[in-house]
Length: 73
Length: 408
Figure (cartoon, chains in turn brown, purple):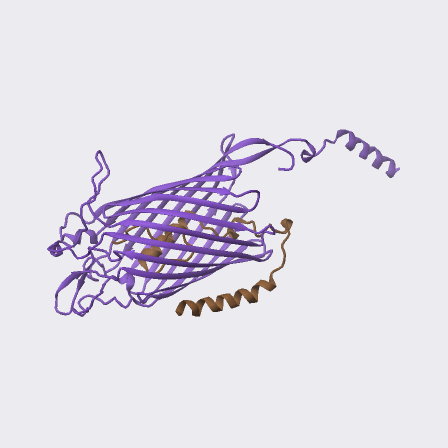
């Protein structure tokens, strides 16, 4: 139920945002191709997400790891 | 007069000029062959709510975590190896036996992963499989995973999905050395070893991650990551004590099923010519009663063409699991119980600074030094736990020169 409460506004947001998207030509991708614009994260952030999954009751969505370690200390 | 000089100049350029490289039937192109990343992370924490001693006592912990990633890149496929050793020095682990053997007990986690990804046809569609292992004295985990990624021809959208299963064994006593010893038993606190508290020592985690990335315009990209995690088996930690109102003590106990729903949204915006604003929101809910919200903000500032500084902050809040109560407050008639403050209600803040130096310079004929990443974060939890994290990564590439046919 709580999940649906979050998911529905996000879908609504997508519906609002998608028509506002403008086509980007290959020669216009200089900003989008910048390393800082990439969604993937380097190993240091993956390590922090792993710590987060241990030191809180939740996991970061889209992070590399959701189990596979004790983290029980 | 001027026209004559112009004509002579143009003739000289025509005679001196050479055709552009792209007009040649074959051109030389460089393809990254191997990417190498060497990583070192350090984690330090202190607090006063150790789950080993029932929600009270020191949580002092140090983790040194060296590791590496190797990616062998071919035209249509990629093979990845990664591995590392976590050296864990934990004060609370001594309290399992109440043996003050040292200021802290040292444990190790050895982990290794293998991944293979292949491009399907000539399209921007990549499928991958992977496996690995994670090994501790009291934990052994084998993951198996498959992934799929598709980028539309316009490069405006990207869809990804990854399914993984973790097979975990929580028994203690295995050792790797001259002779591998098999695991023996679940380890309970010393005074609670008079009986077996659980009827299984296995934990299974089924994970489905999905992602949808959308380019909004030439400066803005956004993504959403819904995820589903289902866990079965022994979800409690056998050496976590729980104290009850009648002064009795037992080991932590949870239901043997757990369903978790994380969902996250991210956005990246390139502001001006030197700044990237990174924002994120994460929501989490599970059927143990925890609901969490997290907000991230990072601003990457390119202080020079090679150097980027990235201050960041993350705010987080979660409700308590319905099985959580502090030391000595559990009802003896309860069926499930924990005093692990990771499952309590709290707020936390994490803040820090990232440093990136990306010279992309050759250090040998085929070797490129890509970048150095260093990141520091301080983490404070409202129950008093504090932690510090430092990560440093060095990234290199070894290139292979190949001849390619026209049009490639």
